[in-house]
Length: 297
Image (cartoon, rainbow, N blue to C red; front, side, top):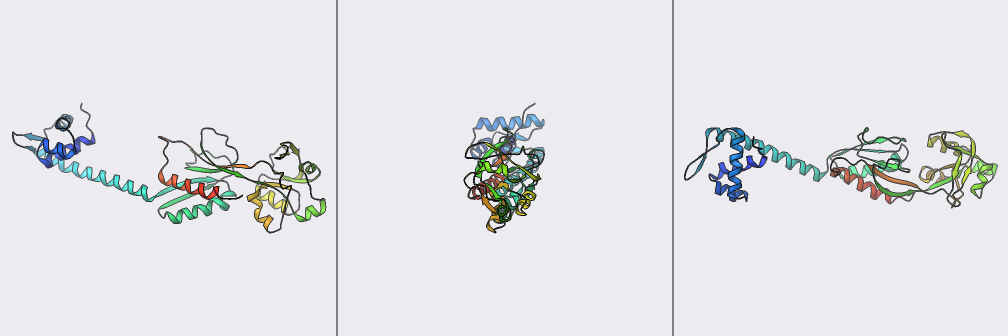
């Protein structure tokens, strides 16, 4: 059985319109032999004579004329769909699913995406907030703005830089217990800790793990920061989380210059198919790269 291609249908319509193989070949920019083979392949595939051949001219048979009308409509629909798709891609349209953390997302990602949506009125964004390492495929996420080291090497990565840490405490706590001048002194202070941490903080100046202890623990960053603000102890958090508390004088930054190494900030995504992201996804990603890389946090 002959393998008919879309080009065979286009060639047949050119033959019907031009009335000869030679004219059809000129119109299509193909050789006479290629046009003739295309017609023969189509007729063999259908098992029907589409064109009656005379010494002077080719004329479509009744079946060929009816077939030409129907495939002309089909090809017009295909061309229209193709043009619509290209136009849609150029103007950026469709839905983008983006993941990020529950605290960083509302503070920094949402405002940037609001600007992107204003510039692209036919794009919709679904922002998925989670503090766990989500499965991008299972959650159908186009990409994730992730804080921290990347555990899965199969993901594609775009590095945006690092987020600084802050060691901080309330003025009341510092007045009552003193201000530590070196990380080694933290072992004599109450600290606010993550529930699943190993009670050691790593600092940048000597890379040593400092053993810390405290009476308040939580996996929730907002709860830990609030506990520090209320005077329960010394906290360690990304600077962006507590910048407003510092600016408002609710807490004070301490041990400046001794902070742990910056936390990686990156955009990650899964390579799918040919590896080419939809244009709307690439555009949103590049916009976030520009916005987040400019942050001084």
